[in-house]
Length: 463
Image 1 (cartoon, rainbow, N blue to C red):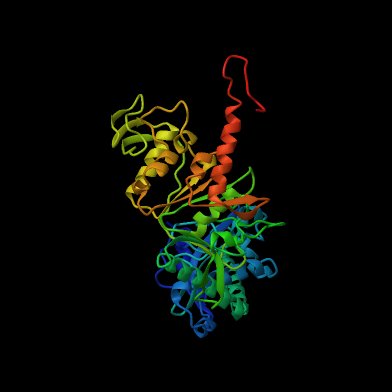
Image 2 (tube, rainbow, N blue to C red; image 1 turned 60 degrees about the vertical axis):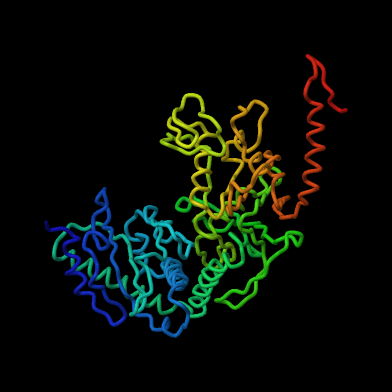
């Protein structure tokens, strides 16, 4: 079938330059295509190009961290496209439909990730990497639609050729110091993450970390969102929480910060809207490598953690031990193999039990997403249901070396089981003494007891 994509090899043959070349390994119709938009207003394209960048050979840093260099080059091209009309093709400048293609120039501060994260953004990944000849980029763009003809093929060849020449010029203008800094930043994170186990940690939050995020249309999830705009309070580890100090392998700088230990119960508390969930999100995003300016460059977390929530699911042979000593009503099986529609608490019990079975290095508990009646004991709870707070108080061997990182303000009995407590107040971190927290909680519960009527119409409020 005669299509624009079928003519790509012909177009490629005409694009000859000492600055770049098309690799022979491209897959026509998969990673190399030229197709009309669904409304046939534009021609959309994407294909791999290898740009010769000799300066990269002058930077003697490990290839494993080169995503930082690729990120720097891609972001420089995005910014430059707004000034160089030849590069406007990147965001469909000549199509009249630029809003459709803004995603191509959307900033991205993720340099690398163990998951297929933000694949809709132009960023370092398996298709955008350093290679022996330079940098291989999966370029993209949009042109005004033209019907397929020999004359129009010539027009498209000319436009794409001009676009590639502009990209090549742009890539050669990227300051070497910026490339090196991006490379070093990723190397710092890779090395620091590899050191966590030796240090007995599951997470390190470096001083100066800025965890809050700003969300956009194309970056609506905390792991890919950029740093918060405006006032952004940095994190600094309180001295009472015993900051640890580490040497960064790429930049050769020393940084101090909070280390969350393997096997500990670490609690983050405070009033509403103080940044507890935000800090939890940043901890989970610590498995990704972030580019300079993201705010999370010195926050790293070991991979393999879990963040269970209370979303109800269908349970098929789920192990609800050690939380459930019996079968929940309406379900079948045994506590170690339960079947049926799980409530929020049963579903969360399964997710935590499954994480423990997998020997997860850490489990994140966010009060906003948790089944509170499974987290703390309740007056009306069945005697065969054991809360997480109860289990932590009774027998921690159930949890092995798994750390719990807990954020909340209303789960006091669970917070009281913590080995260390961080309090957020006005978004600033403070250490909270565990003994003092427990004493204060005891006094609080004594006052709360006065709110319970002893007889109809009687209260001891204010006693």
